[in-house]
Image (cartoon, rainbow, N blue to C red):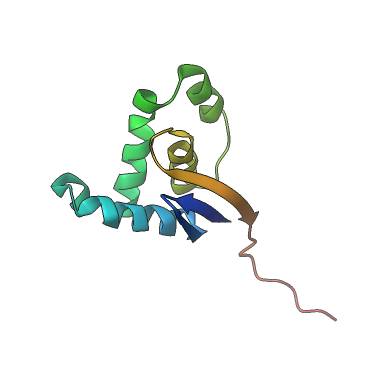
Length: 104
């Protein structure tokens, strides 16, 4: 799992990809009934489906070949590469959610 710091239309936002996309979805839902009916997963899938309309073909091909931890991570990365999205990823930190063994 990854935690991100993103620049989102002038604001610094931190969280995992799902949290960031849900925040963005809620904002977009204020102006769109279609988005208001979506949950975070549907919104992420919509970002991925719409990517061919907003990204150059060679960039999309390169991104499609990458491995991502989740659909949310893929969608956030795609969104950050869309020139008009206003989202830019500043940092990514991988987190390990597996329980650590107790020190002896």
